[in-house]
Every structure is written in C-alpha cells, then in structure tokens.
Image (cartoon, rainbow, N blue to C red; front, side, top):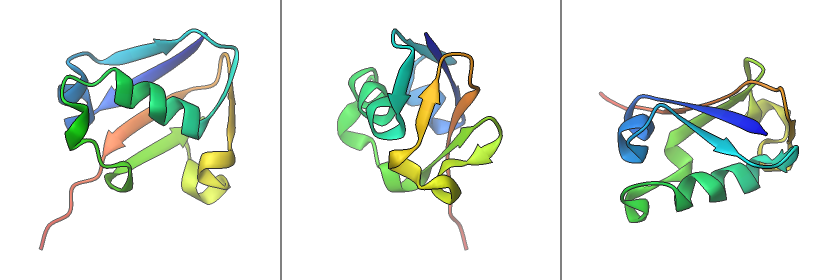
Length: 84
C-alpha cells in the first residue's frame, strides 16, 4: 500500500490528511488520478499547482509523471500558493 500525505489546500480539498492507495507500485500519474477521484470537489483540482515529493525529492525533478512509487516510499502532495 502507498500512503499519500496531503498538505495545505489539497488536504482541505480531500477532507483528510492522507490517502492510502491499495497498490504496491504506482506512477505519479496514477497517484494524481487517485487523488482526483478522492477529492470533495475534483473539478477545482489543478495538477499544475501542486508539488509531489517522493522520499523528500520533488518528483518534477525526477521525470514527474513517469516516476514509480513503491510501497514504503514517502509521498507528500502540497498545494503551491502563488502570490505577488
């Protein structure tokens, strides 16, 4: 199983601090799809405004959607807030 910790606005959008994906291996794309299905209001989900880390490393620096996450890896998803 893959434990996904949710931080910031995405935590509020899901209504819970974490999700558990019942798979031993999944891509970041699969995890984002699973997240979208588990949001209270999925139409407001914007994958361009979130940061996904795998074992503390930004997944976008690791090929993002092609990354493979295994059971036991630490996955965190946080909403990015832009301002000016």
